[in-house]
Image 1 (cartoon, rainbow, N blue to C red):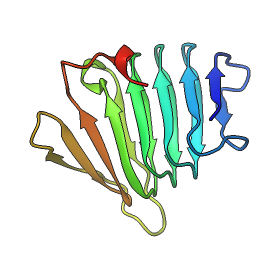
Image 2 (tube, helix red, strand yellow):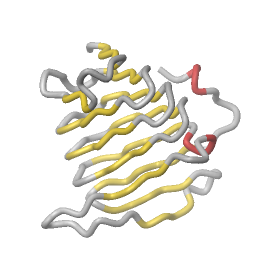
Image 3 (cartoon, rainbow, N blue to C red):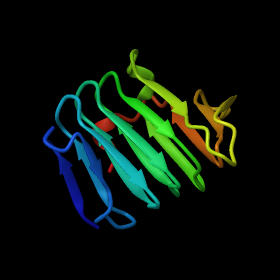
Length: 139
């Protein structure tokens, strides 16, 4: 496992070409962005304003939204993507990218515990709304 600290805008869309399954990505500067492609069991932490990520063909992934204005785009994937603390990001948004084989929309449903499932583009996104667990407690 490697921790990738994305703390520069010199490369505004960090690529995960040299990353491996299970790696951690910390976006720490305003406006930073990344593309996560083909990885599983990754962790992505957004820690500043107006950050973005595009997730292409990802497996199970954990996302922690500690910033504001976080923009998340999902295309075809395989597995559960879990997002923590998104309910506090009033200007953040989640979108699906349409591909040749998949319609680009996410259908919401309740998880039965105060959170939401978004299903589509070959994956399920779980928005966890748990006021008892602070973002700093996640690893």
